Amino acid sequence: MPLADGKAVGDPNAPVVVEVFSDFQCSACKRFAAEAEPLLLESDYVANGQVYFIFRHFPFLDDNALVKESDQAANASMCALEQGQFWNYHDMIYANWAGENTGAFSDKFLLSLADALELNMTDFKACFEENRYAGQINQDVELGGQMNVTGTPAVFVNGQAVAPGFVPTYEN
Image 1 (tube, rainbow, N blue to C red):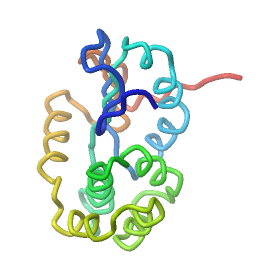
Image 2 (cartoon, rainbow, N blue to C red):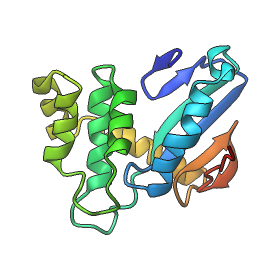
Image 3 (tube, helix red, strand yellow):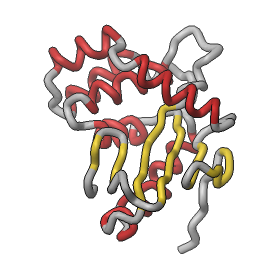
């Protein structure tokens, strides 16, 4: 993946900025991450500095749930980011997706993904337990609210909504 920096990939000065608001529990987000993201992230547009891709957290599917799986998955991904592994962790979360609010993203499971990536578990656990990036995640949510995000994945190109919940289909 070219020029990955945190939750963004590409040249921050690119003329085209693509932002995607996602919830790790969202089935359409899983599909977007598997089908559309690789096409964009591995494209010449990103590699040649024409497109800057930004992943934004929008954990909302657990808003009315007792267990905050979306929030904890976002939290864990940011702790992986701290060790330079956001995108690998992102891929592992979606590869192990098992439905919305099913208990699949328990704290134990999220920690096991970090362990599988061979992250420094002392640092990861400290970050995870203190919910170190709650403020940054909430900033993404607030930005999504300002941009009228009502569902995920929400895709924006240069600040303009492509389509709420947009998931392109590709024919072989």
